[in-house]
Length: 253
Image (tube, rainbow, N blue to C red; front, side, top):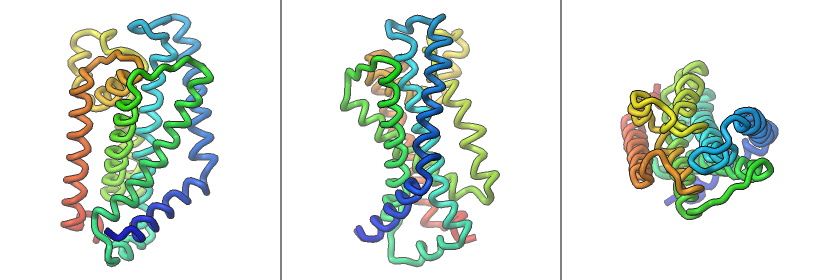
């Protein structure tokens, strides 16, 4: 394992977060505060509790997941797209670095940045609602698996994208609807039977449900199934990225 190569990529990507501190940290905190003001206060005044939990506290895991998904996908995709855009990707491909080392550097940095923002959102939420974590180990596990898997997914998008329009297509067009329809701001038990069935095809539902269970012990889906689904998604991303680096798909053209 070439740890120097991993460290170089990792530190370079983390330095980008320091250079864009206002956009990386302040913006998510302001957005989360607005979510709590709008959803927690306005809607929370009409919906006092959801499954025995105050509405503001109920939406907190969903808000953290919403931020974590967008940050990890964005960081993962931009991290590899810019070397492609500037041509420095060839320096990485020609260097004595394995696929695992490249992934550890780029995906590790993207996941770290996403988890830092997620942790800040969790701290920010404490100013608005009382949060209790019933299963802290499982909370960290869901948090870590989600960050790593969606950083890998973002990395795949960055490789696939040929221009900035494609780079933003999935994060802007696909991810937000899946997040909002995945039970981030409500329990799917509130939906009609048809839409409950449709929601089970949404992968984000399993992330939000499992993460919320780690906080309050309530879930729309069995947490074991949620853990299995995110593990399958992580394995699928890893297999796909291994194939990409072996074939050079969208890397060498």
